Image (cartoon, rainbow, N blue to C red; front, top):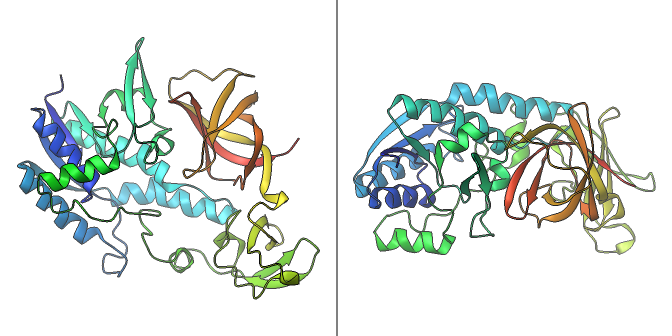
Length: 362
């Protein structure tokens, strides 16, 4: 049994209850607050100061020590720079996935073991099961909060040294426990969006790092219907921020980004959430990572999702070639987006996944 567990305390209710549960189970628990971003500490959208205050308050209430460690340098090099580089190439990366594999379960894990940890713990909603000498990442009991999608790039070493205390709980149970034990952040709002952007407008933040490159917006009939600030600021399936006045032929349907032409710096848009050009039969994925180290079988029915807030969809892996694979779905999928991650499951076990290179159609 692990004796000393270092818990990543973020200031939120999930990590707070994780620490309380472990302390209540008799472990020696130490909290670690990670400062991963410091470019705009004085910005109205930056919550790091309040996060630290909440984390310290929680640690005092639970009766554990807390340390603060600055990973801003590592974060900028291993997460943020790759995010910006991806946007400049015209894809839409997911920095939260990189943050988990490179910071929370790499830099944090190494630091925690220097502190004498037996294992680390976080407030993620997921489970870890050891079977036949392998560690498996398993979906959380609360399907509405399951975060295995964001953890699919973890490896055997990382999983073997980690604990997810909330894996068997509902979010409502977590808040109830926090309230019962008088943790002041029991009703704190969950953080949303990309960690370093927070609640601020995406384009407003990105403009600090990527120059505007205005171009034209066309509809599927080739009509010029607006202007954009640069294709890097948009993603497939995006509805907000197009600033297209009115709707064609008075249909009343909203406009969505259908395609991005990087070379010509143009956007193709169409009306309706389920526009045919937003629906694809499959995808090509690269930068593959399989948690067990073993490739999933070809022509075997798995399930997958191409974005976090999405139902799992039946799929097959059609082909492996030169570090990539093609994945085909039983039903067309919405807005498959280059740069995002496709994550593969067998029942409730997360097998791993890869980065979407492009959408495919039969």
